[in-house]
Image (cartoon, rainbow over all chains, first blue to last red; front, side):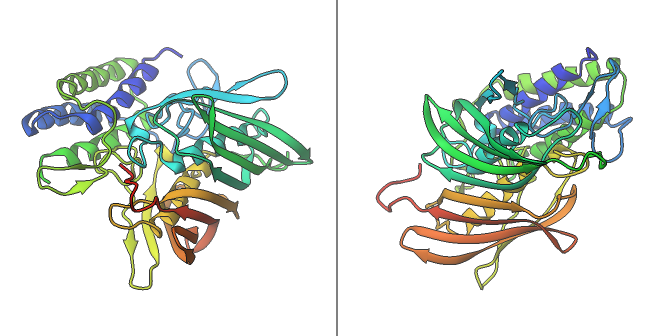
Length: 193
Length: 193
């Protein structure tokens, strides 16, 4: 899909960061605000109701483009690019900046849980059958600094529609957060949509 | 603080939503993008390095304005407005729209964990001594629909620097996610900054 949407999302991602870190004076804040308002007016001319969900783009590909972690239309999403290797390991490399801060200079503990929830859940997903989180347990081993991180998850065992998964976040090769969880796929006769 | 920053953040929050839900044509996407780029140029003229952390504003009040959940400069933050009653119950009412979507029409399970991590942690915070998450356990009882939600947390018991907390998210009066966790305050001689 090349309708200019992804570059726009990328710029809004930079804008979120700039609004947090800018030190320009109130007059310039007002000038920037006028541009944001103008962009809003243009985009607001025609909007779908509710949320994006899973839709086909002009290229026919169905995807959850509004997803808070992986959506290519969602500026909140870092976005997370999830890789899977042949052995079933699911992993991501992500660089989290000022917008994901909790404790000073560190990633919010809840953002770590958000990433781990998604990654552990990804071990259980099947095409068009996303898994829902049943339980998730997190152990925070040490603070997670802002900056480049790796996260990985793998299946411990499966039992029918239930997947028991484990995972962790690493910063500079050291584990900062460990997770384990149970993820449940809806019955095949019940669509997630 | 009335330097126009909060209204700008609020508009960028609306912009995140509009980028997800807009259905305007590529020419209009490009026109909106030009405004976003112009805003970025203005704000980018002077930026603090790193992240916001905790700083004093012109009014002297120190606050974590970049915080991903409560920061008034952070457009990712809904923001969460955390209330505390005399009995120690910590709660928030929040309306989560398209930008927080995971399963179609529902809040991402990881966003629920992010909110609960923060809220349970808030039961353990002391002025200028934020608590860090030790462990967090989540049980997803039913899917959490996008829309107005309530979340609440309370202290189960305390043991020195450790706070054992519980909490839950409710949608239309029904519990969707339950949480319990242990939160740890750094020693008084070690600043969180």
